[in-house]
Length: 464
Image (tube, rainbow, N blue to C red):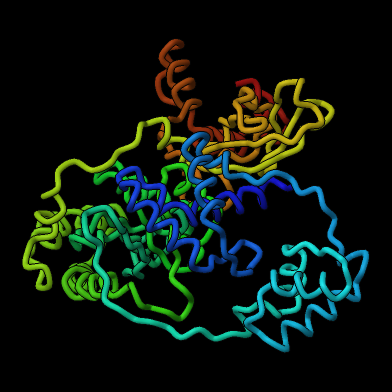
């Protein structure tokens, strides 16, 4: 199984067990959450909704506690699927699903077995039906239930979003850019955990904000986000998996659960962005300085109408919050990819070439790196450290998807090296000022006009 697909499944399994894997739960509470997880469907990376038994969920929880995220990577499959050998079975499976849209893949497998005596993989039937758009989610419309929700304690649930800000000067292009305000709000206290304006709306900006937030406020249990590109990517999923954070995405066109965030966005527009635009912003750094001061002095210190308390007071009432060690934080915010080591014991990344240990030739290895610093790449083989990739051809120092990390052009020093050398030579020879060649040309011209036309004056002038 390819690394990307295997890691996607591991992250999916973590999303299923994340709520029940909380160390703060009692056995009774954990059992209730496991039963609840087993009783609902979960969106698999292949697009199909699946259900898992209690035993399966318990097994995943034990694996995660023992080995972390790598322990949730599935073992390679050994079956090839009976549908390939009997393609006519798929036509009948499709007819069975269309006949009764709520009919599960397991039920279809059972019908095919009793009708033809052929055992078909449930996963194969599910995948084949999904490719034809016959998955149950597309055929069965489930009623939506709306309700009011509030987290029971600080850091139980963070909500993140992006708010489009004003235009600010951007020196890298000598023009202005539209600043993007990345925000994180604590659901229980309504605290603006952190907020920062970025020039680029991408995955790394979201990771940078999350790293700032957990450093200041601790690690949340759940991170709730929409399906935008900064929040729906493998890098953020890996970050949450390593930190033990459950990443939840809101369903498209379903804004429920984001009311607190939307109200805060409106308040920021009215109380801060209006004043910032009226005042005028000289740079992105100045905008962030002003916003940081406004958050601490006004936004988090005001009495919230719904809770009747200042957000910072309600957040800090429960004392210190869960933290993780520094090494885990560093690893969580690195990016990961796989490469096959060439015969010359090299791997490539973003056009750069790196040397790795010769024992890894021909093997697929995992590269973990900070996208803003491609000079340092750590190599892992089968989940274990395998040394460092040594760069020997570097054309790019930052990942192309992180333009905000591109190193700026150095400022001019104003030093004229050759002028200093010429001045030193003049001082050493005692000549002082440089020769004015235009005056010399005028002198030669006047001598030519007064001298006889026999060439003698010219020769003397030339000799002079």
